Image (tube, rainbow, N blue to C red):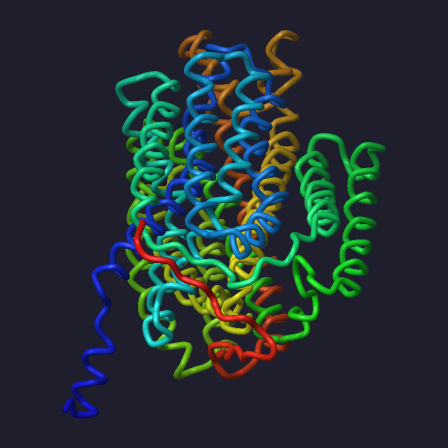
Length: 525
């Protein structure tokens, strides 16, 4: 007969199957998140070799994010109903085939299409990885597993930039797609070895709600991406934002009336669920917004190459992952509100320190504010994700995971748009006094970006050094304004969540036979 202490000790140990499930799920989510940022360093080379315009380059990055954000919610529901492992494998297969397309077709339009298709595959992957863990792990292990998953997901962008930097150091931009294709194919094979899980019953998928959700997200995210270039008064931006808001209202109405809703919108009445969703969106808004700035700062101001700039961001992953692992335990002790507010305030402090960087700054001047920021991300990432999952029935964990992922992608798209637009506005405004002194053909490129200004200066020789100095000052000015804007948004979210977030940590939602059918788990395939 086992003693109570022995039983507790045994129950605290992860099984071999749980370890393998966690490994495959984390590698899969790391891949699809990494794919979002992997092309940051390759965009200049893509522009030169394919003739892509600045607008096309933007869509090569954002096409992936847009489709992912549109489809992630229905993808989670499909996994709940028809098998999370099956959806994971199919998603990885689609991602792999789409990532292979640029190896054959390098026209900018094909690159955009390939990235959009890869985004559809990623939409199937992301919620499946999290819902596989929450369904496959015992309740006593679930918080730690989600913490590890959240830490890896939060570090995925850095891993993508690092991997691309390693490849670009020796090969062309095509090598990035070779790497994504190989990784996707390997993980698709590995995913076949984990246990299947799904709802016991199979109610019909709410396709009307799925379509409304896709239109809502597409409209809002598209408007967010396009407004920096077009302005809010542009008819396309207004029409897109209006369609997104109308679709959102229609989606809410449909879901409230549906007997088998895609997403029970009443979940947002739960403070933990809504606070977790908002926190996740802010975290990714900050992460992808600041990465857009940092990659350029390291390369254009400090003069780092693709690999060196990627390595410069790697230290951020250490406090993020380490703190994410222990954050669920801290959340149980101190409550969701304390963890969320403390994390966001720490992020805001780190961003404010980054905003003070100058042209003469060194890497170490940048590193310690980034470590502060990543520590803040570690404090609030796992508790936010766990809050979303914990207040959702197990049979709906795929949809809960999809809400978590949709919040991430919407936040990422908005972060890129906000940071990019403020940077562009600040740079353009600061560089204007220097333009009349330049030849007419050079004024347009110099006013567009620091990279173009440096290229023109390199062709002109030493006499253009004043232009280099002025353009770098303009870039740092715009980058500081963008970082400060992100800091203000984060601080505002911290104030809001100090009111909205519950003081206690969320507990796992207990399902009952009357309300929710138990999850069905098959053996290892």
